Length: 294
Image (cartoon, rainbow, N blue to C red; front, side):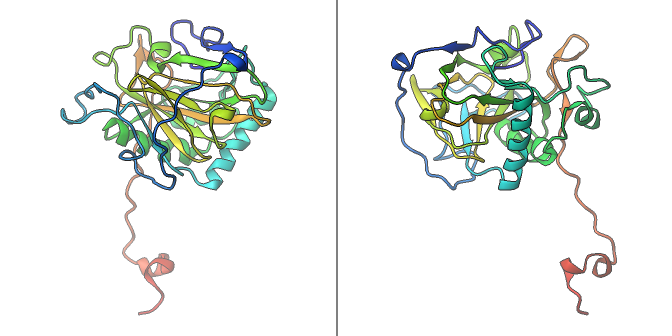
């Protein structure tokens, strides 16, 4: 499912598996969480026992939660833009066991400084991205989860599970697959923003995370964003429904993750938008903001 530095490709058969529905594990659900909350943490999040301390960029007393759920983080317009690209990419290269159900937005042979430059990366994609989601909305969420003042884009792709299939994803942590020899002491921490483009539950293969030794299904609605720490152990079940289960996956790190002289995958800065300095004659240029009266 994830780009793998060890092999320079997308691992498939070692992570994906076919399993008859009769022997699929049935995870236990813990305390349903109310919809409608936009908070990063709190009652809608869990913290595993023995949570690790964050890297020095955060206060020593703070801890990085293994996962969190942001309810209704994406607007309907943003969802439609992401769904449109997911459907177009899936039509070009149908998701399957062979390609890991991953729909890659990059061109086959991208050129330029696409690994480090936003404009070059946008040009290297097959289609224009939902830029506000990729470079503004999700980075701000990632910053709060990582406790960082700024993040860089590390990776992005779509995951589309075909309907009525028995493809499942094994238990894994992202860092174990993506970064050989990963350690929170030697590598910048990063977080995966798993954006549900469809309502997700056990029927269509929702995410399942390990919490306190138990398998916890993460049921979410379209527009929710699930944050997965780099060392969060998770999996997902098969899609037994009659529709594809689509998700958008964007990952952000607190600092560039390098391999040799360059980025391991991407290292595109996502700085907060610069504050807008209003001109002196605001009443003339922005009448809708200050009114038309004297």
